[in-house]
Length: 203
View: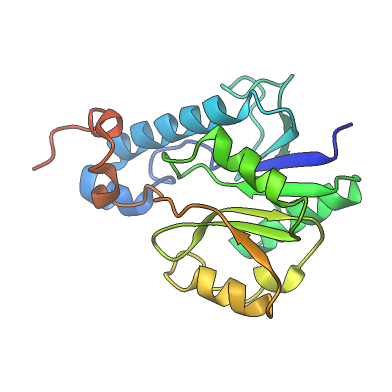
């Protein structure tokens, strides 16, 4: 077994339940198309990585989707908010014997395999690595041990998540990756022509 584990958090792709902020502008059907494209991108950039991988669904495991059962272990997120769900998944990974754990979501179209590998490499010399999102959150977090405090009492989905997380780390040396942009709103789509093509004409 490799000592490295990649955790991928996704939402089960269902109209009305994914990309809800984006859907307010482009509608549920188009938002679902965009989210499916984000899932495919996340699959493409993770499936060839040499680490072990586990996919955490928001609602229920799908054994017949694009995520190969030979490549990805599959589980369901547990917890009442994002922080609890991430903390549970990371704790489970360390309890399984992994030494370095990187967790990503499925909202970042700019994320590439190299960013994820850089995060694992950084954990050779740092206990924590974070990929800052331009909206004030983060698209990636990597750890060599548990830090439960960073997942508690956070205003998830707001512009202060990264700031509050770093404050909770109390001076710990953190390796910061390049800032990237999540796709949450119509403005976020404007630099991604491949995603814009998926939506109906925007008035």
